[in-house]
Length: 452
Image 1 (cartoon, rainbow, N blue to C red):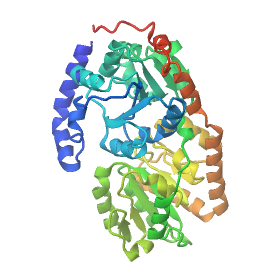
Image 2 (image 1 turned 90 degrees about the vertical axis):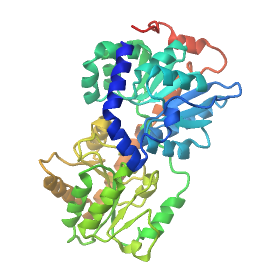
Image 3 (image 1 turned 30 degrees about the vertical axis):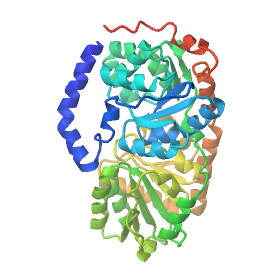
Image 4 (image 1 turned 30 degrees about the horizontal axis):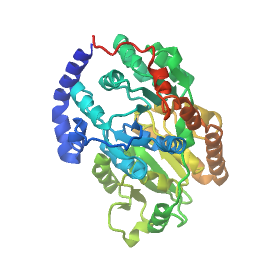
């Protein structure tokens, strides 16, 4: 079974190789860390400490892991933490966020036996923690062979993913047999994992660690951006976060519909993927609005421009404190939405589109509590622009409504904190630093690690 998986993975890589090479040439994607992805890592000397390997696929998972890492290292100071990511942007953010706490940050290996084994030999982990939705069959299998427990942390299985996994349920059942523990976000997530074959005793509901988002320690970047773009200059600011095509076109059209507003708003656009910065810059240039790029040399006219393009990585959280309203992208485009809790932490009014399956439970809670505005489904971009313009106008024209929406969002966040503490408590046997009992408890009753 794993042999056929490896063959199919190889065929998939070969089929997509032209796209990989093109993206590597244009944006540096996939080429970065190629040796690490092949499992070529320098031997890690933990100085006798037990190594915990935390895997975060990209930026969202890396940011979500921040409170978890803080709690883990506070509760287990003698552990050595290493962090892997899959994407280039995730790698950059992980180095910035965990650089002072992780012993090493590197790229996750390709999911072939030879590359996974090389990486495991170099890192020699005591335990592996995988954030959210990452199921890597060969990696899990090789960990099981070495007696290394693997825990899925902040586990989530969307309805869409569940449907795909059901098509290969016998194989997924084998993959989940190599999972020692799953700390799921919701009862629905836990139930889907069990339906796919995870032993019920290994599924636990701990809540969503994203509610435990940390307060910013300082705000020098926020103040720098405030001064450069005159964010207190009297015109309200709408931040469009983590946008995908065609959301930038929808936003610009919505702003065209708001030019008659009493206080004409400004727009800050932060595309989700850096490789789209150039594309979005061309759209803004063609719109006729005055605009500035964060990455350009500061100019006096930056303080008066209509649109700001945030063409940087890791700075989005710093701008939420400047916003009057935040639109969270990936939600008009059918991507599934992005993190609505980061602007909620700043008590900002949040607007999202109809496609929020990635944050279904969170969005439902916020909507129920009157803490978020969710746009209805529309048949085309023009309709989406009209709905967005209507929602923005209502919030920008009503200071009280905007303030109440933001305060309610912050209240929902505060009331749902605690998942990190529950997760760390659940992981305690796995992270036991004084004996092997905890690890043995979690890896017993596993299926044999031999291949079929």
